[in-house]
Image: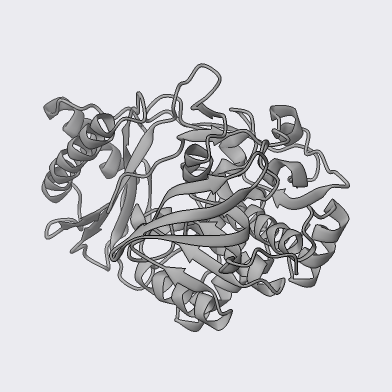
Length: 423
């Protein structure tokens, strides 16, 4: 092992969402000593911090679910099944995509247990505050936690923060939003309790309730299909994606206004559901958030950007280290999602250089910060794919920590295949 004398870990992963979990598990299975840093008091990313209660990207589009993500992602599904969550493919009637429905509280516990089983040192309530770097390497990270600041060293690092926080503090170049600096809309998922369990939800009645809300409210909803909804496994609660907010920039003020208005909208919508929709007479707003669902923020410079053509042509590559199988899904206008199918076999390859930072030799990317143009990003950002790209990044980081140099794609592919990944 080529390590610094004061290095605490082989691999440090920033972010405990799907990409970070994938990275931490991948690195640990490759033999690395791993630290996983997460700003919330729980793991899971958008699935638990924004009530995005569905894993997208595990399966290809089509009449039958064809699995595209294995390895670490499949381990998470297995851990959920042990806790009584079915974790089976569910066909969305709104989009025609295959998703996996989630129970966020069981997911938190499942992820805690998986990390413990693999000896991963998890640090919750901890933020990446700064990094120390040379011209081509990050040498140490400054972490800000409940007990103040501390410096941690590692041989390799994975930025799976979703917002490219490591790339930001390391001074790497990045793009905000698309090529015109336009950010995709954010969504505030709602969880509504108190439904009559014997009543089938009537989509036409939901659509009418949204129309009634628009007739009364100051914040119109632009979806005219009733939104995406289902019952939460194990509870029967109504999970609803209908509130979208334009995100004009990455300022705290913009995010504050989006959060506050979305909460007001959620309360008003539940009032109308109670009044108008059969089965919702005793309903209440059980939860929003804890934060709004963020689709897009910073895109740090990678050594390769997956292109729109890569996705729609379903390009396969010898240096591919993960599959992308979710269709391009863009939310450029609030409430008006656009989809574009993946061509050829229904999936494309993510190349190794898409998870490598440009400008730093020992920093890797997992999840929605990997290299992709603004259209391809609509496919790679989802959580199922994030498990796969995170696992590839973590595995590559572990191999590089062991040898002192970046591994070749065939080495990473071999290690991932041994870990059960689907490439």
